[in-house]
Amino acid sequence: MKLVFDNLFPKSYKTKYLKNKAILGIGGNIGRTMIFFKKFLVYIKNNPNIKVHKTSPIMINPAFGYIKQKDFHNGVLLISTNLQAKYLLSLVLRIEKRLGRKRSFKNAPRTIDIDIIEFNNQKIKTKNLVIPHPYYKERNSVLVPMSFLNI
Image (tube, rainbow, N blue to C red; front, side, top):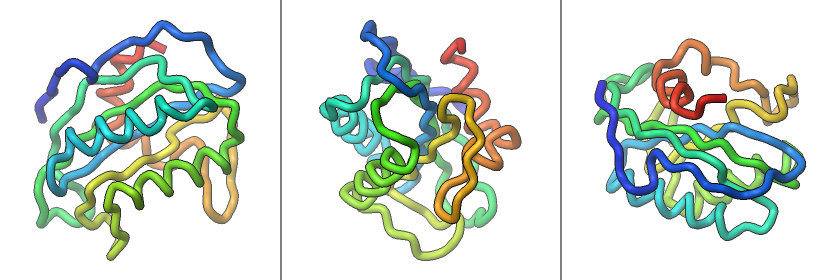
């Protein structure tokens, strides 16, 4: 495992909080992953219903599940939003698709994966959305970057 620091990861932004707080996890291992992360950051920062407050450094770590693939880059973002959780999910799924995400099989290589890790410390369980993310406490690829958010 290795931590990568650059001008956008980690970074703190001084901006007012919107109605809902969320932690997003980002990951990927196809192509120029840091470019995909930076494009994602631009997309959400340009959305008037989202404010980015902090980003973590990026952690490079081995794949799990399906292990015959390149190492992953992973990080987290603290955001606030006026969107409800289900609409935030719709937004991040659209961004994943826009950035070339293909869902071929579970734990497959990907350009970008965006997960809602936490949302207002709520528990949400629907067919398409489970919050908090069910496995985040088992994944150093989430826990180590989250430790840099100081929340």
